[in-house]
Length: 288
Ligand code: G3P
Ligand code: CA
Image 1 (tube, rainbow, N blue to C red):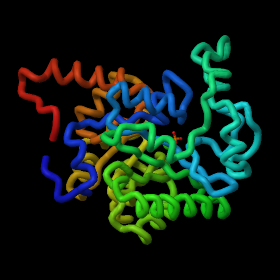
Image 2 (cartoon, helix red, strand yellow; image 1 turned 90 degrees about the horizontal axis):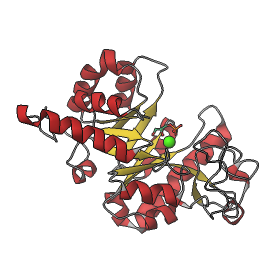
Image 3 (spheres, rainbow, N blue to C red; image 1 turned 120 degrees about the vertical axis):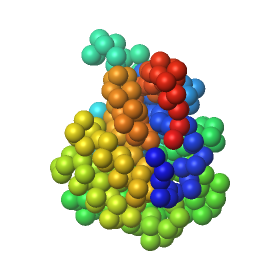
Image 4 (cartoon, rainbow, N blue to C red; image 1 turned 180 degrees about the horizontal axis):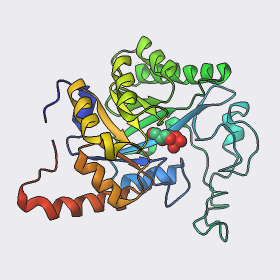
């Protein structure tokens, strides 16, 4: 299927679907750590997805929650700590693969990374889907999200090579519009949850003029084919989250989604390649 147009950024990754490692290879090692991102790269991810927050002293750090308790041995809000304070915490503290019988990453020195540390740790062929965390219902948090957006734009201005690597996403349109207003060339994607049916989520994303649509994996069985076709015609890419069952990733790949956001990049890649190999004699292409 031919697209009308899509952002030139995405041409760097012609092979579809992209494997986008959600918080790194976070099904296997502690999320949003350098360990998770480096492992994702080693496992063949095309992109890593990560969550950005801002510290009390204005640094960008990679942490999903607004607070520290779920993933670290710290307490309180991320934005109330300095970078130095955050980096004294153990970001492997809470990770367990056996429901709390063991915590194999405790005390190994895993830290909350700064965004710049993640950029430096990854090979330049790996794309970065930087999700700016912002709670639109909380004016102060939204201002923090917009401040993150401004810092990202400034970072790209200082380091133009990052344009080749950086997709900015958010659930908050105010964040994406801040990016757009300051740097209309940067690719931006809207993350959505199924408050409205999938076609309506896509319609809003198109109306906002964004480059990528990042829906949750809900509604694809009913609407997936039509939504993917409409997105292509509008020039948007479709990256679906969070898809951890390999068989489901294969189904979404068959629907033609552009990216699979998953906690298990290697298993997802392998499942899709196995399915493609099975179909190859009938002429199925690996890319669109
Ligand atoms: O990229 C979308 C996905 O990461 C959103 O969910 O909660 O994992 O940040 P969450
Ligand atoms: Ca995220």
